[in-house]
Image (cartoon, rainbow, N blue to C red):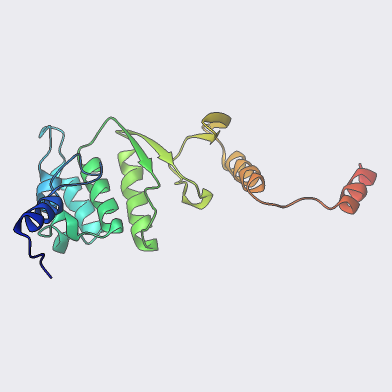
Length: 187
């Protein structure tokens, strides 16, 4: 239902055309997805083959002709991954890159990230330990902006141990007093 006031309708239309967040650097919400992917600041850095692989991975072919505002939150996250990785930066921060992806897409993205890790430095921000990819060589555990633990080029055993410690820090598990007493008697 359109408003009867033409000025109000004009304001509504203008609002629909502007982006209200920083996801796409102030691009107009009516911009086509393909334009967002292929309009790069530095054409020398854009990897069209990688872009094609990521578009296929995320089944994004049909969305290329859509307007940005038509994308769901998950589709927008995928668009940001395609755009960021296709530009082949030297360093990239990936905040929850697997969030919202199905199991098959996570595995495929993990393979691509493993491949790319030989040519770019990646920093992963994850909240779930099961989302930490195997390609990670340095681990940092940050609480309130302070580095609490770090592990560099860990073995599988060390990695397993740090995961156990981190898990215990986030649970309400405690050792019953009678068990502590039994443990101290055995020592």
